[in-house]
Structure formats: C-alpha cells, structure tokens
Image (cartoon, rainbow, N blue to C red; front, top):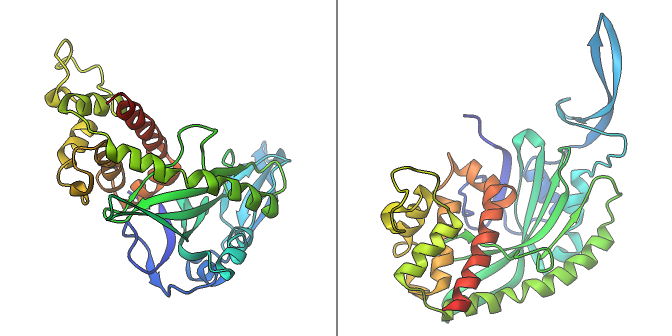
Length: 318
C-alpha cells in the first residue's frame, strides 16, 4: 500500500509517529518549509474534458502544483488557494518572539494536505511527574471541501500520545477558515489567542481526571462507549465483559497497565482515557502514516474527542 506521507522533516527528538528526516532544532519557519520539501506553489487552471473530439470547459478549475504539474484537486470559481508560504509565515512572529519553535512539517496524500507543527513554550505537569506539552498545528489542505485548520494539540510526553482538547464547538481550541474567503492571518492570530486561553483549562481537565477513580466495571462500560460492540451474534444477549468487548476496546484494555506512564495516575480516569489515545496513536491502523493522518485529520481525531468527553462524564459520576 502506498504511504500517505510524501515529505516530512522534524526537529529535536523523534516524533511520536517515528516519521520524517531529522533537521536542526533552531530553524526559522522558512527554513523548515524548505527542509520539509514544501517550498512549492499552487496555481489554478481551467479544467476541460474531451467530448466528441472536442475540448470543452467543465466550469471548474484544477489546483495544480507548479513543480511537477500534478493536479491536487478540482475546485469551484470561489476557491481561494492559500500558498504554503502563508502557512509558514503564520509562525514567524511566534518563533521570533521565542514563544514557539518549529517542530515538524510535511505533506500527506501526494501534496493534498500540508501541515506545520510548532512547539509552544507551555506545559503542565500532573501529579508532579506526568508532563503534557502544547503544540500549535497549522494544516493547509489543497483539497476541495477541506478547511484550513489551526489548532492547539496537547502531547503527553511519557508516551507521546496526541491528546485532544475539543469537547464541542464552544471549547474547541482551534480556528477554521474555509477557502471561500480570503485567509486573514492577523484575524486568525487573534482567534488563536482566545483559543490559547481555552487550551490552558486543559490542565484542569487532566487534573480532574487524574483525581477520580474507575472501577473494573465502569472502565469496561467506558471502553464499550468509545468502541461500541458490533452486531456480533456471538456476543448478543451476553453480559458486558472483557470477552464481549469489540476488538479495539480489548486492545485498549490490554494496554491499560502496560502503556508508558500507567503508574503516574494508576486507577484514574486519566489512565483510562490515555489507554484509548495510546492505541489510536501507536497500535491501530495499517502503518504510521495512517495513524498520523487519522489522529490529526481523520476518524481518530473525533474518537479522541468523544473519548475525552465520555471520560469526564464517567469521572463526574465516580
């Protein structure tokens, strides 16, 4: 199967997904863009079809990568492409002020998804030794139907789990900009400042989860909520137990005590939540490429949001 990662570079320690080539950890955003192989432009061209020996316009445009002429997507008349330069320029003043440092950048799905990740000079510690670092992710899709997404992403250091802050639209520490409007970097930066304030409350959520204990039965119920059982005739009518859990729920149950950092909050809903994030980042999926894409842009991003929301609900009832 073809890999989803086209090009990628990382600074400092090897990232959780283990992908990319190492670069210096003091790069400017422009230097990171170059090292990651993302110093290319896109342009819009008229889209045509061949019919009855004639070349006819489709009324759409194609978004083409200038370096190799590859068509990345077909778009409508009101589509406003954002060049990769703009994505990396977004980080410039943050890096210059020392508030962030470039960490990772790359291209997925043949150039359709470009992203840059910067480490924020913020972190918090749970129970005196369980550190969570904060990162800012800028994804710039060259793909119809996808929006620019700028969001804070917590990463638990001990196990390299990418966590989630999002519970709902009101608590989401992110900014999304559709391609039907002109990208306004200054407005996005102001919105990110507001989102950062929300991100700081994540520490309170994590501390709360680490203070609440689960029972064996409540943990099994939680896993069944996150990874529901399918209509398997072999388990129909049977009481909920480890044996009747879905495959992914069993995977999470298996790593509960063995995941890195399990001893930091043993028996707590923080440990329970991280058993889910651990398998989504390190176990599920065909390979590291798929896990990376799913955790940041696909189904596992939603899965983690739902898992966090459910963990809070169970902790409140504990």
